[in-house]
Figure 1 (cartoon, rainbow, N blue to C red):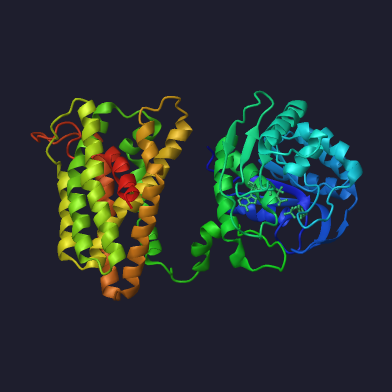
Figure 2: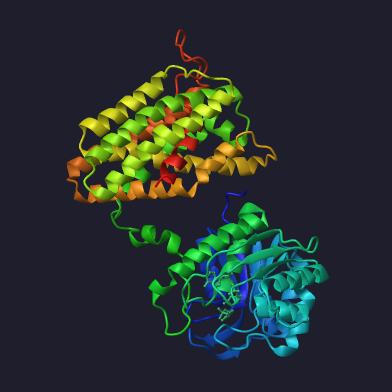
Length: 525
Ligand SMILES: Nc1ncnc2c1ncn2[C@@H]1O[C@H](COP(=O)(O)OP(=O)(O)OP(=O)(O)O)[C@@H](O)[C@H]1O
Ligand SMILES: Cc1ncc(COP(=O)(O)O)c(N)n1
């Protein structure tokens, strides 16, 4: 996994309404964290209602653009969209052959959804001939049939078989896309030249929108960008699909054009962008920025690094689990106190459910794991555990409700973020048998992520009503809890204090426990 910004070149046609072609590509590349560049293959006069005309500059102009980019910039990936005519295809093929780029995605654009032809009929053979220059080809069902030289597949199973034939003939990976299938499902599958079985097959309910202009362009350029970062096509597809589904779900809100409008490429960062440059609209964003230093310290902890890359010895892991069990008991109490003081039914239910989940589901899971490892009796709570739990109990009992809420939030939010970081470390370590894989997987639990979002929303609601002085107390409580999270993660690998009953690592609340704990706090929701 690479942390640098992928430099991605889109070779494609234009759409002045910004929904398809290279405009969609540049937005998608940026939305996936890449740096987008583009070379124009054709000026397409179109809008959401249809294609009015197509103007193809001389092929030498395209070659000159491609060379201007590659003479100057290291290109990590290229996404190829509309090519239009034989000379254009040949120009791109020559440039690709000369430059051997690490990632090449070819979206064989032939006809716009709105109906206009974007590839001359006599160029189909030339397009087939260059498929092998790509790593991944992303045809829709009609394009797949043309590439196979066959009739359109009558079913999804037939489409997969057709995809496999194209993959084998041209020795290329094929993304078979189900966007044009009849019915309410939109499956996608990656098929390689080897086995007819897909490398990965994903399915989902069709997002109910008529605004799907440019989905093929957006998906292919997102895939090119993600592939630079992750180096694994199934992972890239999972992420790109989830993002594109969100972009489709938010498409209607854009209100661009009277036909099939564009998707919302930046739906996932819209909140942050809307408040950019002004005072943060959400108090939680301020708190998050204030806690950046402590969160960095957490990521640098030996315990976190070793848990992530799998080098952590069993003993500190169990010590962590053990302390987390102690912590959970009190965290459950703190959530119950918060529930009792919550201002409305929804937040009462949220914290009460979280409390119940801590003391029942979570604690039992911890006990079962500890029992498996032969640890029947819990160790005494270590000093960090005691400090953290005393703080939480006091904040949720004696401070105003918004301060208590700010105190419990890091256990959701910072924890979720640490989980993401740990998974990144585990992926980078590339262990076939990561010793804590099952534990790390609990961080990704959708219920936990959802609970984190809810807790954050409740905090923002409380902050909106709070006086400036109260908001400052909320900030102090949040930052104090973040520092305690850090100490708790640090504790298992700190030398035990002489004379404590806690044993090795026993002075902390076990970090691994937190992973198992919170997902299920959310899951009971
Ligand atoms: N309504 C929808 N709901 C969910 N996913 C969709 C929907 N429409 C398309 N998709 C997804 O969008 C991606 C593009 O699929 P599609 O088969 O429409 O390709 P395309 O025809 O090349 O796109 P375009 O419409 O831009 O030409 C696929 O991942 C497909 O599953
Ligand atoms: C320049 C260009 N490239 C591709 C498409 C296909 O997108 P869609 O099928 O969504 O119209 C398009 N309309 N224009």
